[in-house]
Length: 332
Image 1 (cartoon, rainbow, N blue to C red):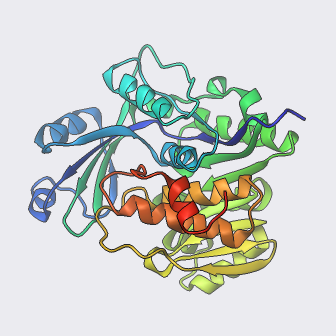
Image 2: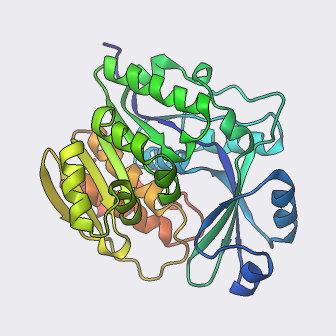
């Protein structure tokens, strides 16, 4: 068995987040669905980028946000994702490395430009995303360092990247490598639309390949095609060793070896931007699990990290999550 060197290795879309304040009139004028995520092409990305106001540009993507959160907790993380050798690719690479994350994926030298997510944040804290996936979709098995996968306590994979054939092959190779090394495999369902496209495949993954499943309420209901949360909970208990199901202000529900734990949401004085709440919840939970913490502590770390994320603009913690956890009496 390889020596452990990383807490979590993540595989996902390498995206530069472009975050700007907007009002509902801007969304309507530009045909942007409030609170949702729409895939767009390069031309549409350039058009919207030109119309957005002053913005924050930061390395993003769901899984990359999670791995950055793990680093903020004091953990050791690695990330695999594809960028192009262009300006935004350099932004992504510099930014994620500055978080303390190992990122050595070789950039593409041709083809689509680096992915970007244009995020319009309205005064009510809702984020409306227009995403150009670009080079991120070109991730292949050749981009993985299997020694890092084998040396990571948990391999965490982002459901958003299940669409491209080669990326799917990379996921399956990573899962196989992790299992053969005696490590844990984790998957985020990412989005209910992803679930609708690949429901049967995700069910098989949850049952046969994945030790820890992350989903929000709408995603888990979609996975099992039910309307009642408790019915979905019963189904996932039968399929997964661990599951972390988030329910916004209602907190989260943890399945661990057949037992169910309900975790309260961390209180936030004012929700500024919900971008990355689920990503940071996963960071807290994964970090705790990688360090051998009990399920309740893992869930509390997840809630704490999610609360920090939604208290400001952007999906990355502005305060040290390790310091916040210690202040709450959560031993790291």
